[in-house]
Image (cartoon, rainbow, N blue to C red; front, side):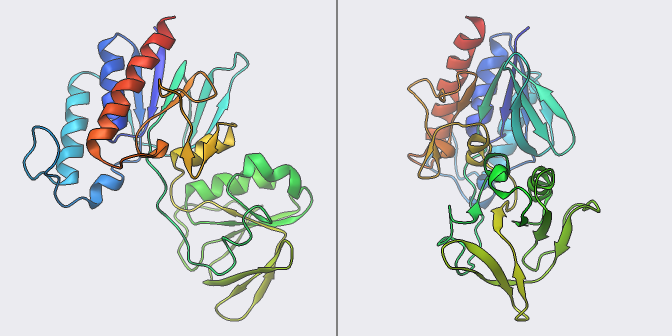
Length: 285
């Protein structure tokens, strides 16, 4: 039986999973839990509902999927790779999972840091993809901005080629254990400094920490973060898909907020349905 993995358990992901399961395709949903829906106090403009909270709507979707026999894995996806047959392999904070097709439906990352110089140095020492840019920082001192599993994953990738790697948590406590080969500083960052490229950061105690690059890995990796790592086309923080929700890598699909457009439940459900049907066609042919 063909295997599909859906990353994300919101309206787009669950909608696709339902179509896949009903077509006798083995489908697994990987998710750390509710995303942007949690912030919706009331949803009154979705067909068939009356003043549901985002959490209530989310739980109803999960319940319907589980009744159908869809498998759920509560783990954090941190990267996508490919095996020797160019089939997708999902790396989470705990395991690896192989699939024949993958749907990215994790929404868009809404985490940001108001740090002076961070945006200005994007592409000039500030990066959002360790796998993409580690080559340019061989034997150099680099830093990762974040405090969770995603930050640790990016730091571990960089540690293979960089002279040193330091996680900068920006004053937040780490949510995971840090190995001995990775350093850690828990201080609030005031600014990112440099001339043409990043040279240092300044902390709130006026200490200056020298670094050749900063890799941003805040919170949980979103769909766009995972897409960038494997060469999927991205523009304006959105994943580029065709009319079948398919990316430029045939086995990878995307749906929901991560592809842009109207950020509404109704649109996400529609995207998920289209993606699910397209994945069925892809897997059966």
